[in-house]
Image (cartoon, rainbow over all chains, first blue to last red; front, side):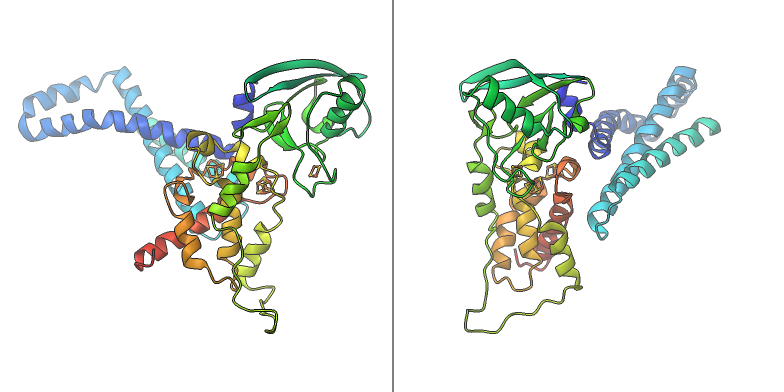
Length: 114
Length: 238
Ligand code: SF4
Ligand code: SF4
Ligand code: FES
């Protein structure tokens, strides 16, 4: 492993990376989300066409990715709040593991519900 | 395994490169033993720093195979499975020569974080009594054993991104004083650590907590300072 990676290869840093990357990707997705919401207000026909487009398997898969990102960002945020606002204890690695577990469980539940 | 292949960074502020050495492998050998062997036997021009050799003075920290560590209490066994060691000066600090990093900025930041105790009493007064099991006292206990080695500072990405960032060790020091019920400079200290380069700059990477050889969690103290600063700001005291 190269030294730059080795120095950062620990759960706290991974949790930071996941939180940061999921946050950036979600922020990039937001304009598309607002555009679709805008359609719902102004152009029902185009919204229907758009919703039919989202029924394609690949788009479905993308939606699943979004849910995973959202779950990861959400549970990662709760992890940070717990870490910084609750009395400190030796649990930051467990918290990161729980956050990872919760996000995967949520994403799996969504995949099964699809 | 009978020999270690050791690459040591040699150079100064203008730059440098790794040089290779072969060092005999010994039982219970520390990384500092390896460096000392090189300096005493192979190359007397090698510059490095140590004093106590027992994990008290904080002067021997270096980058060992990419990770900042105290070298006197890091056994070769712990860090090198394949017989190779790569030694470099601590990151995030200027280099003086070879393995010696310039710690001035690191300690200047302790001063900037108002890391000095400000007492209320004089030698003519009685002792101030602090209950050993009180919460602030226990929080101080968890953070007070810092040896000033700079391992956390050198592991922190925020220090690399923002050179003004006070860093985990100085903020940890400020936290031990913030929790010290005898200290009389609380407002001033909170102002010193609550700026852009202070506690709020920390991204909670936990690298400092992961690497501190004294098992201190500067992240814990920084979180405490964040809460204290936020509470003071809400009350209009900051
Ligand atoms: S927790 Fe904060 S101070 Fe510690 S390494 Fe991370 S960013 Fe730096
Ligand atoms: S907090 Fe730990 S790693 Fe940082 S200077 Fe103190 S002893 Fe070294
Ligand atoms: S030589 Fe003193 S801590 Fe390593």
